[in-house]
Length: 291
Ligand code: NAI
Image 1 (cartoon, protein in one colour):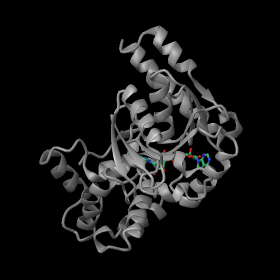
Image 2 (spheres, protein in one colour):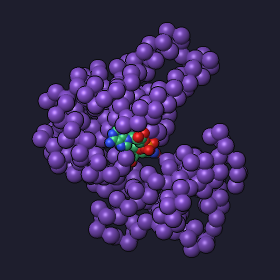
Image 3 (cartoon, rainbow, N blue to C red):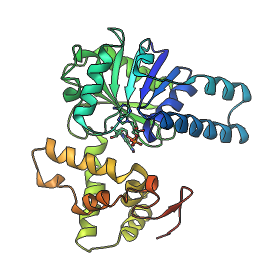
């Protein structure tokens, strides 16, 4: 159904989405308002594929074909022939709404417009569109090629055929698709409040250190990483925006109150791996302070 996929936003998520679909056989056009972000993303993906080639996980022919399927788009207009566009830009409703309005004037009438939003209302993003029935959520997790689950979010006006198309595409790429209603935080980021927001509350109350909480949740329930390691991976700017958005959308239900610790750390630029320091410090992408 989809042969030509546009990806907007070449950050942590956009680059992963581009790699996933280039690997599964689609032509992918990557666009970002910062041209250098696209160059970085393509180099990053090439590097990952080179490592798989070196490990024998990928043949030379598959490597060449996958790299050749990832293209730099110099403008939004370059996405005009795409049959699916996936947006992975900043988590701000007005910015996403205005991008979708702009896109509608460029792409064909049947092009599916998907958003990788973590927590914003898909219905709200579609609200300014002329054809909200072709807008859906397609919510991946970081790192996209490895986290083999994706939420397919049905907005209030999304047509079933578009939902079916995204499920089929995800499965063809080897991901497990879960159809979720358009409720705040969908499934994963709603359930995840207990993991992240409560951990921040424990930290602010002095119950335990970030390192202790991470260790307990790794060694006890057996999560792959603790909440603070996950904040550092996701980027606290993104996680805090999600916490604020879920809180707003649930009409300030105290269960979802965001943490002042997170707000302060965002203001200080302690965002996690992307700034070299979050709850832990990083050098060359490696955590250098072990709990
Ligand atoms: P990021 O900050 O790594 O990348 C965002 C990119 O979008 C940047 O390169 C920026 O230059 C570009 N951008 C911003 N506004 C733009 C515009 N108007 N047009 C084109 N490009 C624009 O952010 P990240 O982490 O990749 O998140 C992107 C989206 O994915 C957000 O909606 C976030 O909530 C969601 N998300 C993030 C996850 C994570 O673990 N980081 C997980 C799942 C979803």
